[in-house]
Amino acid sequence: MNAQTPDPSKPGLAIGIDIGGTKVAAGVVDEHGAVLAEQRRRTPGRDPRAVEATIVELVSELGKDHQIDSVGIGAAGWMDLSGGTVLFSPHLAWRNEPLRENLERLLRRPVMLTNDADAAAWAEWKFGKARGESRLVCITLGTGIGGAMVMDGRLERGRFGVAGEFGHQVIMPGGHRCECGNRGCWEQYASGNALGREARELARANSPVAQELLRVVDGEIDSITGTVVTELAQQGDPASIELIEDIGSWLGLGLANLAAALDPGMFVVGGGLCGAGELLLTPTRRAFKRNLTGRGFRPAARIELAELGSSAGLIGAADLSRSPRTS
Image 1 (cartoon, rainbow, N blue to C red):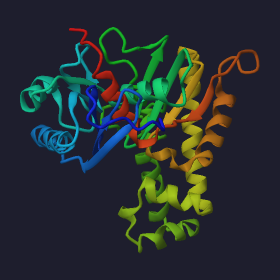
Image 2: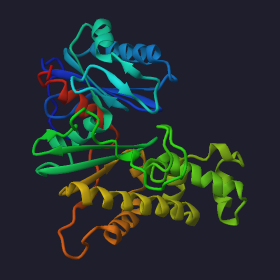
Image 3: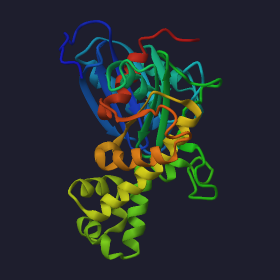
Image 4: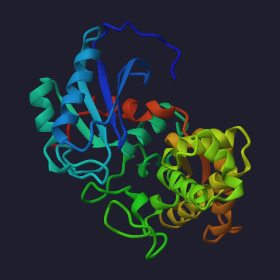
């Protein structure tokens, strides 16, 4: 991130909060995208009021030492175009939740609400890997798959504000049940949750190639997560590398579908699963090239790892909170 270290008391600072299925991350962010202070908490179950209380706690802690002008919330789910209501969140218990109104009453500050993937894409476009790219599609791989688009310097949210839910394109009809209610969604095959599920299935089959997976969790199969698999793959475990390659193949197929529809100049892939680095991107690029419509006769988008890491969502949310509201 920016090497400049601004005065922490300078006006214009914003707090960005990234709410995911498992964690709530918050940070004080300056106008250059630099994070001056950061705090994290576990997502407190599926209770909306408990999530609000966690946000208030984080803002209170971070606001003790900084003059905060606004708060941006990047949350998993669909937002209305005004940025006031969470229409639906597949991983949290928000259904038509007036989150901005609730938080402005509690925080007594202006609050901006956006999708967490939109926030991460904005950060990568303005401060990170995609600077200078006119048409960006950002994919975040974590509990599920988030997606967002920055087109010609603006977030593209669609007619009703729910564009970018790429993780819920059906890529395998009749496949694994998804939390959204459908079967065969992309995120059931190319996310951190999918990686953990496939590894647990391999271990339950008592496959001889799964012995290292079983060893590191002392035989507790339910403790095998995508993070465990990623760490073992980085250490050279063949089974874990193979599992990552399978995820990459599904990821590349989905990106090829998106390229056929959207024709971006770049895909930026972020989220926790990207700790696998080139172990993930190499099979992803290979599958993308193999499945791209018109391959060999058209320019192809670059596929790159996100630059801002796990802080991208909160950086983008903070920066977007400085913009005037659309309603």
